[in-house]
Image 1 (spheres, helix red, strand yellow):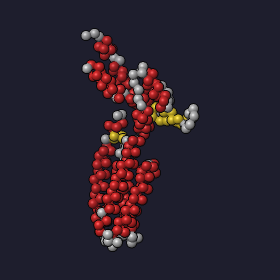
Image 2 (image 1 turned 120 degrees about the vertical axis):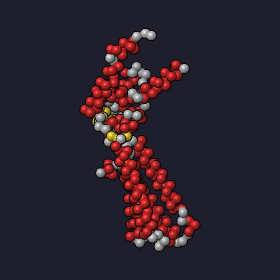
Image 3 (image 1 turned 30 degrees about the vertical axis):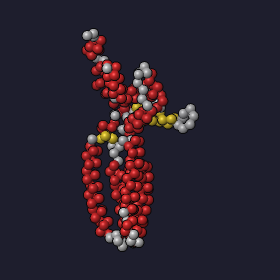
Image 4 (image 1 turned 90 degrees about the vertical axis):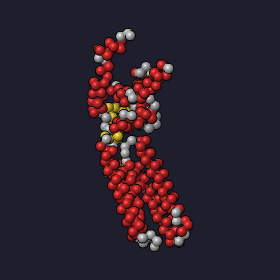
Length: 118
Length: 139
């Protein structure tokens, strides 16, 4: 049962992290969708992956909200590729999110608690 | 401005314009020739054509970007319907069995429905950012 619960928890947890990983990949530099997928796969040690459709859907919303923008650059073959990057608002949003949510998990008391044995 | 930017809405208008013209011509022809047993056909077919056209474009628009354009689509449907209907009336193209009062009453009641839709739309807009509902932004 533990494995099943763990799997359900991880599924929900990972879904909620799409924006964070997307922003993290763009903080690393401008990327097109395949690059973003690759970044997420590599940096999560292969534990997290998102399908192209989900990424495009989020990118379109973030572009509309002006936290992400893109520029067209020629691809290897075929049509131009959309290279996405964070706007200044996007960078600010990520910084504030990390400050309020991620840094908290890195605090000494939480780290200590997670490392401590029963 | 929304119309110029929104190509899907523009395509929707062109298609429903065609449905409205076909509806008016077929209904008036059937009424004029007094085929009373067929009179139900144009409104029923018109209803389904409008419903599926709206559904097709609405879903396409939503998949692209989850912005609530329901009111804009409603205004477009309302405007096209009455422009075509009153256009037919002014051009003497309606049947003698279609008095202007029917159009006026439809305009009145549908207009009230449109106002209710606008009020609800404004309420929904308050819980959205740039047209995207708060629940949809990071889903």
